[in-house]
Amino acid sequence: MSFWEYANPKKFMQLSSVLLPWVAGLAVLCLCVGLVWGFFFTPDDYRQGATVKIIYLHVPAALMAINAWIMMLVASLIWIVRRHHVSALAARAAAPVGLTFTVIALATGAIWGQPMWGTWWAWDPRLTSFLILALFYLGYIAMWEAVENADTAADLTSVLCLVGSVFAVLSRYAVLFWNQGLHQGASLSMDAEENVADVFYHPLLVSIGGFVMLFVALVLLRTRTEIRARRLKALLNRERMA
Image: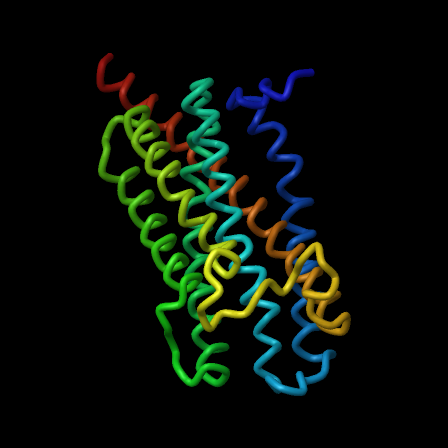
């Protein structure tokens, strides 16, 4: 069985109908366990106090904000190369979800940063690139709405997605590219010495798993909605022509 068979809207709808309840259930379970564990059963940090607990929202949201754009990039490339409509619709479906995660990351970052840095905002390389990424999300969503022809909109938004990927990369690696800046290094790393303490690390992993499952569930749900909307539009056009 070929992976590309699921680019067929009918087969995608069949597969997603089976996966969606399980993914949504895992998302709810992981989020409840991770957030309750993190907020109520971990100690305060010796330097940051209770403020550190916002890590269970901020880090997963920031991680998924970047990875959502990467997913959109992959889907856009598939559209450009193979012209599979499901991939274009999946990219469109992911954009509002990614924007929401980006806004959560910016808001929680400001709440976290104010007591740590003494300011709600700083033109730090990572913060600035994240803000620009949010603007690219808005531009991507607006372009889909502004262009009437769906295939033309998919082409234009795919190009925009390629350009915006630069800022997705900068949002992830800005701390490495520029030594200056207020933002701390990565909370999760292949280097164990850079990770947060285990007491924070394990509930954080569960929270991240919940955010990943939530993203997948929302993208599946929204892609199914986009496919149904496309079918409805096609039926209405046929009735008008008849």
